[in-house]
Amino acid sequence: MRKTKLETAATRVKIVEAARAEFRRHGINGSGLTGLMAAAGLTQGGFYKHFESKAQLVAETTEAAVDDQVEQLRHMAEHAGAQRAFKASVDGYLCAEHRDGEAGCPYAALGSELARGDEQVRAVAVDGFERMIELLSGQLSATAASSTRDQALLAMCAMMGALTVSRMAKGEPLSEEVLAVVNRQLVDRLTG
Image (cartoon, rainbow, N blue to C red; front, side, top):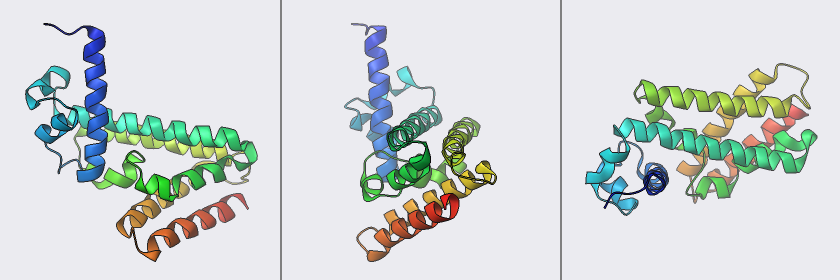
């Protein structure tokens, strides 16, 4: 029995969501198609009905993760108001919930693997990163006097690095320290 277009689309979303979690747990290279499809409750044989390649899945997964990250930061910022938007985004990014959650920033979790991806994967990753910079730059423009793009680039790179180190040191005092120090330094220096 053939699936409807709606069922096919739902299955594709299910695969992308399962892949996001698997990539976060095992990395892109550590996640094989069999495991990815099993995590979605499907068999490997159906993969190519939905995707041309694993790279296409990585690109779609990255785009979905960036969409979610941008939306979460935008939501936090809207509730905080224009003057506190940047601080709300930094607080939401550099926290234990983000560090430990199943979803989250694909750059902190997979940055080096995305950099080694094919052209399609790198293009999606760069486009998403630009969206993050645009969001932070807009938030900084309410409080900053100098180039907000420069500051947003600095902030995003510092946050990615801090989240990566915090994940690496999870369970150690350094994990919480790095989140707190980078948060404080970014907010004080870029909005103070």
